[in-house]
Length: 146
Image (cartoon, rainbow, N blue to C red; front, side, top):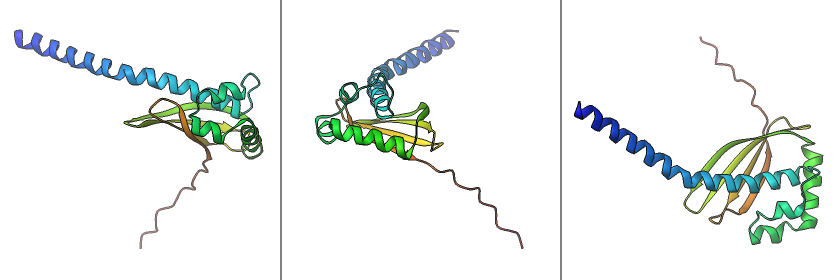
């Protein structure tokens, strides 16, 4: 009986330590998601989103490249190539020693599947981003048997 109780206590302690170690990454993910979602909302032309809210989560280097004029051009390109955003959902979070990657999958009026990728630096600021349309591949048939 003592062995069973000891095993259960050990399993509980191990699961608690796993939960606690993931708590830091959860807070980081929440912060990065807020920055990514603010940028996405402004880039796709949501009425309540502004350049100021979108640029708050950018690194200094990216903010210098994507100034207000360049951001307006980005909004125009997204509208022309992808159309209006229908639905955008979170898909993946990858944590690395020197930064993170947060991935969303979006559906737009002109493109059914668009992968939206954000790369974050070690300070949880957006260092780069990409809106990439993905075309479904046609199913390949198996070669005929001879």
